[in-house]
Length: 379
Image (tube, rainbow, N blue to C red; front, top):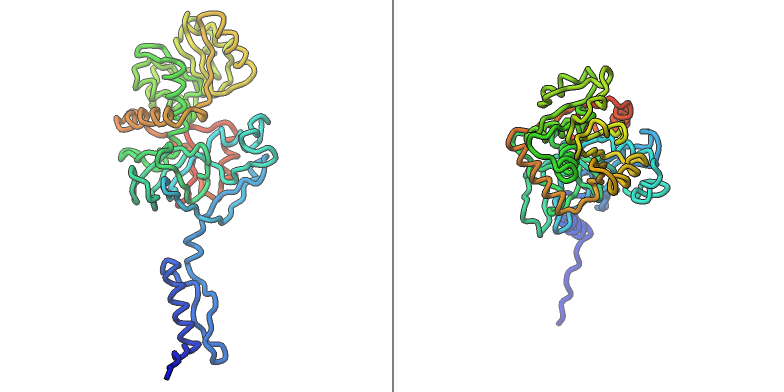
C-alpha cells in the first residue's frame, strides 16, 4: 500500500516561505505573516532593508547654475572584487567642479557628456571609513580610515562611493581629520605635479605663488617650504595672515602692489588662479625661470608653443587629472610623507551639509574661497 505525503497546511507553507525570504535578505524580513479574515497570508512589511540598500546622493541633472543639482535616494553601490566601499565623512567641492557644472568651455563636454553629464553623481575628493571590501582586496580592511581622489568615475557627492584598491586612495594619517583630507588630493597632488614635475623646483630657489590662499595655493606654499624653497605668496590683504601662517617668506597684497614689477626675481612663478599671463610675468622671471599654471587658455597655449622653440624662459601646463594612475599614486605617496612629517595641513574655509551643495557652489562662484570647501555627508 502506497502512502501519500500529508500536504502542508497553508499556514505552514507561508511560515516556511517567510523564513526562507528572511535568510536570503540578510536577516531583514521583507515579508510578514498576517491574517486576513482568518486566512494566513503574506504581505510586504516596512523594514530597514530597503534603506540599507539606498543612499542619499546629489544628482547633476544638466549644465548651468547650481540649481541643476537635486538630492535623491539612489542605489547604494556594491564593491566589485577589487574594490572598497567607503562611507564618506567629507568630500571636496572645488573650483574645477564649478567650471564643469557650467559646461564651459564646450570642449570639456567631450569627456563629461555633450548635452548633460554622463556621470550623474559628481565629486572626486573624499575621506571616510571603509564599510566593506571586495573578495580580492588585500591592501585595506573594513574599518580603515582612508582618503583619496576618484577621478575616473567621480561619485563623491554622496554618502558612499566605491573605489578600486589600486586607485588613488590611501590610509588616512593620524594627524589629519576627514575634513582636511577631503580636499588634500586636489590641491596637494596638483601642486606637487606643477612644482616638482613641471617646475623642477630645487632647494633655495625663489618661488612665487599667485593665489596663495586658495586650495592649490595653500598646499603649494607648504609643499614649496617643505622642499626648501624661498616662497613669496600673493593674495589679498584679508588673507595675508593665513599666507604668513603657512610659511611664506614674503607676502604681497595684489591690491596694493604688482609683483610683475619685481624684475628678474623668481625662478618659478606658479599662477594657481591663471589671472596673470606669461607675457605679464616674463620680466619677473630669472634668466631660466618658468611660468606654470593649471588654467589653460589661448594665451598660455600660445606661450607654451613659443617658449618651446625660443628663449630660456618657459611657460608650462599640465592636466593633472590625466596623469597615469601609477604617477598619481607616486605623487600621493610623496604627499603622505609630507603630511606625516607635519609639514602640510588642510585649510578649511567652509563646510556644508550634503543637501546644501548649491550653496557651496554659489560660494565658490564668488571667487573668494580660502583653502577648501567641504561637503559633509555625515552631520
